[in-house]
Length: 159
Picture 1 (cartoon, one colour):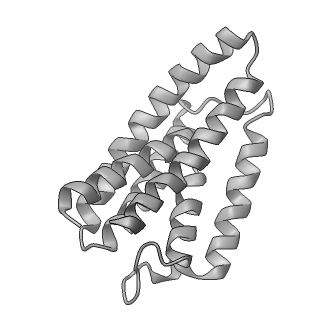
Picture 2 (tube, rainbow, N blue to C red; picture 1 turned 120 degrees about the horizontal axis):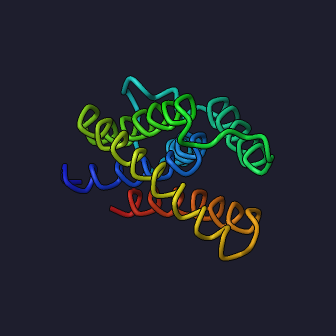
């Protein structure tokens, strides 16, 4: 796969991290576990282990539940924003590692996380206003994050 496509995948998984911070590493872990991406012999081969998949999946599921609570802080609050940047960078780096582009993909993942965080915040606010409440917008965002993440990695597997 060319460097350009790897960077697009990393940017995309960063956007997913901006929407749901634990979904991006969970999806990448599943992709490695299912051999959609090859991490054999790489620094991040541990991401494809069953225990890693389980831990990231539990964290992602917990985040999907916690996000629905009214006291959950905004994704643009500094701790949440930083967590999304770290998650996007990590997930992007793992994707990049599969094709030997770890560092540039890490950067693309961080940029994607910024775009996903700010864009997701704006989109969810607009949708919540249209729906008259937040829950439908939040559930739609959950579906986009999980479905979009798996769709991105399915594309990676096909290339």
